[in-house]
Length: 477
Image 1 (cartoon, one colour):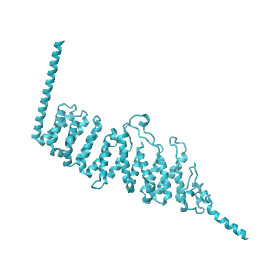
Image 2 (cartoon, helix red, strand yellow):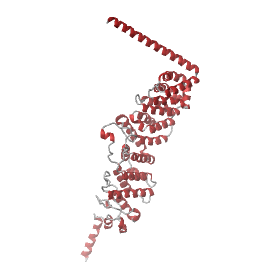
Image 3 (cartoon, one colour):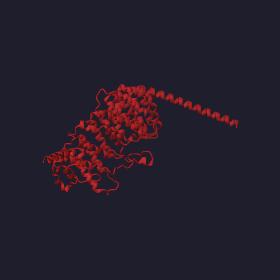
Image 4 (cartoon, rainbow, N blue to C red):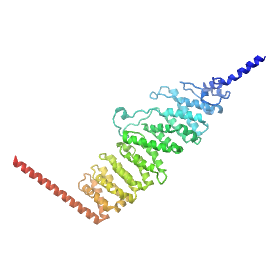
C-alpha cells in the first residue's frame, strides 16, 4: 500500500511539465461560424504566444468576437490577426476568392473592434496587430511606368492613375492602423515600442507609391503619429529632410513630395516663436531647393504654402526666400516661370518694406527680363503684379530705384512685343509710373532716349564700316 501511495506521489509533478496544450485550446482551432457554440468549453490556459493554436497554410473561418466568451476573446483575436497575414494574388480575381473574402471580413471586424474599443488589447495583442499590419503594407512597390520603359516621368495629369489591385485589403489595413493610432484606448507608452523609428522609416518609403489613395492614407497616418508621439517628431523631420535631399540632388523622382509638404505645412504652422535655427536651416537647405526640379508643378501649391508660412512666422526670412527663388529661376521653362512669379507675388504680400529693400534690385532685374519674355503668359503674369495694392505700395516707396531698372523693358514691350494684350498692360504700367512721379518718369525717359540715340549711332557706324569694307573688297577684286 505504501508503494502505491509513493508511485501516485511521483506521477503528480509530471503534469505541469507537459508540452502539449490542453484539449480546450486545440479543439478551438477547428471552430467555424456555424459551430461557434462549441467555444463554451473549459477556460483556456493563460494567454501566451506559445498557447495560441497554429494552423499554417489554412485561412480558417473564425466566429465573431462578440459571439465568443470573454475568456477566449484574446486567443481568437490573435488567431484573426494571423488569418490577416495571408497574402493573395489580386491579378486574378477568381483565384482564392473565398479566402480573400474571409480576410476582408476579418479585417473589417478588426477595424470596427479597434474603433469601438470593445476589446481591450494587452501588449501581446498589440504586438501581433502591428506585426500583421507591417507585413501587409511594407512591401516592394510596383515600378512606375517610366521605370518600366526607361523614359522620363511624364505629366501626372496626362498619365493614367495607377490603382493597386490589392487595394480592397490594403485600404482596410491602413484604416486599422489609423484607428489604432488615434484610439483613446491606445497607450502611447506601449505603442511606441512597436511604432518605432524603423516603422516610421518604412512608412515614409510608402510615400513613393504610385497609388494616390495609398499616399493619402500614409499622409494621414504619419500626421497622426507626429501629433501623438512627440518623441518621434525630430526624427520624422530629419527623415523628411533626407527624402527631399535625395529627391532634389539625386533622383528628381518621388511620388509623395506633395503629401509630405502638406504634412509640413501643418507642422510649420505650429512652430513656436522665436523660430529655432534648426527650422530656418530646414527652410534654406530643403524647402528652397525644392524649386530646382523640373516636376515642380506636381507639388508647387503645397511648397508655396510652406514657404509663405515661414515668412508669415518670421518676416526677416523674406529676403532669404526671395534670393533663393532667384537662384533657381528657370531659364527656358516658361510654365515654371509663371509658377515662380505667382509665388513671389504671394511672398511680397507678407513682406515688409525693410526686407523688400534688401532684395528689390536683383528681384526687379529679373522681373524686367520676365516682362520682355516672348511667352505672353510669363510677361502677362509679371505685369499683373501692378494689380496688387501692397506690391504697388512697395514699388511706390522705392520708385527711384525700381523705375530705372524696368523702364527699358516697358518701352520695349510697348514698341515691339508681338502680343497686343502685353502692349496694353505695359502702357498701363508706364502710365501708372508717370502719374506716380512725373519728374522721375521724365528723367528716366530722357536717359532712355539718350541710350537709344547712342545705340543708333553705334549701329550706323557699324553699317558704314561694313560698307567701306565692301567697297575696298570690290576695288581689290
